[in-house]
Image 1 (cartoon, rainbow, N blue to C red):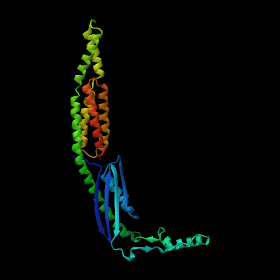
Image 2 (image 1 turned 120 degrees about the vertical axis):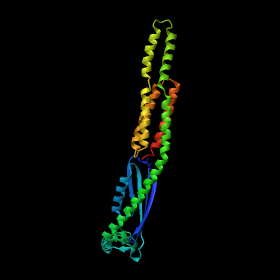
Image 3 (image 1 turned 45 degrees about the vertical axis):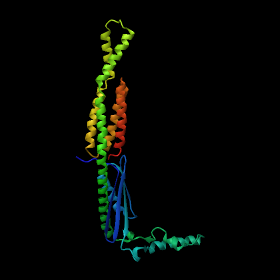
Image 4 (image 1 turned 180 degrees about the vertical axis):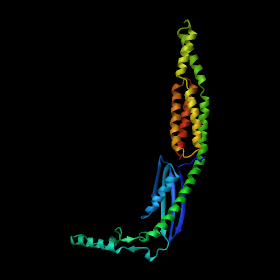
Length: 292
């Protein structure tokens, strides 16, 4: 049996190695489908691919945001380098534009151009970069594992809340006895026929047949049976995960039966039960939106 999981949570993990320190934060909120977003300094494409794959492997629903912050610890004077070749190309182009009347370039303007100043990650050799990215990817997985635990903790809090609503629906369904409605229809029809034609021959037989026909149209036992089946299905889903999408669909079925119950109702008591059922189902539906 898999524990119920929510969609809101937070996880964090830190790592260090090869002259770097980094931290990863993973957080998630409710979402109809799964969406994994990754944010990191420029140049960590391999980590992004690994992070998205790890998120998709762990979660089924929700908007998951993963943030990587990295800092080089051995950075000194060599932590920043100027790409002379790129700078020379910019200077050549700038001088050509200046000959046509453009403003000559300034030093700070040239240094701000893309590719002129290289950060440490841009000058690392490929093998060292691969080792570093693999270590960062492991930290991402740790943060996602922590996020998963956080979401499961939310699920543990949600489970009894859902069970309370399901039990309330079960109780209301048990109270909606169809037999009481059939008897009410019979009594009502008998009274009206007696008032309109008190001396009509075969009145009792006619009353029975007409009341039976009306009772058949207003019989809500089928709706009550389906509500009982839905209650059992809801309990099974709450005991499994991921169950959010199936519970979403089941809420629609619950509400459909409650609406039909109200439309068929011939008694104030049954109408009250139907309306209360709708209110409880709506409350349950709101909580189901938090389930993965």
